Image (tube, rainbow, N blue to C red; front, side, top):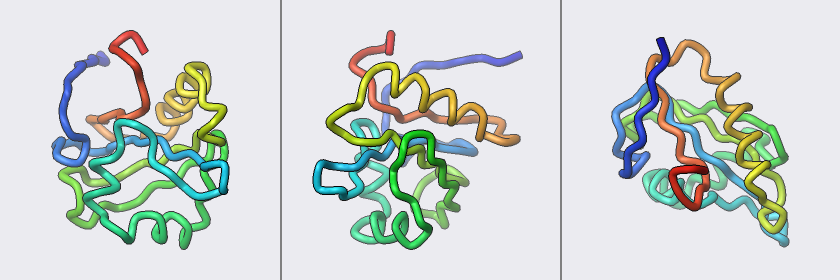
Length: 122
């Protein structure tokens, strides 16, 4: 049986098998973590964007990248989901990103979603 628990807290400090974050492209084409994922990017420091770029991640809608955390996070793995252009991010886009994430969790027993949301209903 699947259970869901809503909690506030840092995804970088959550003990889980997998942390899911959203990354979008700015109007200048640069990668930017979306709200909720700032702590994850901070845990990797300045090497976060170069890491994504070196693995060919562009932030396109539905694009997925699985990264071992190597101790940067309490989670074992990080799943980065592309959200497309930051300027055109919508609730529907975030919902679709959550669906992409759900299809790519593999056999993770616990997953922490840190996708952008205005409130718990999102």
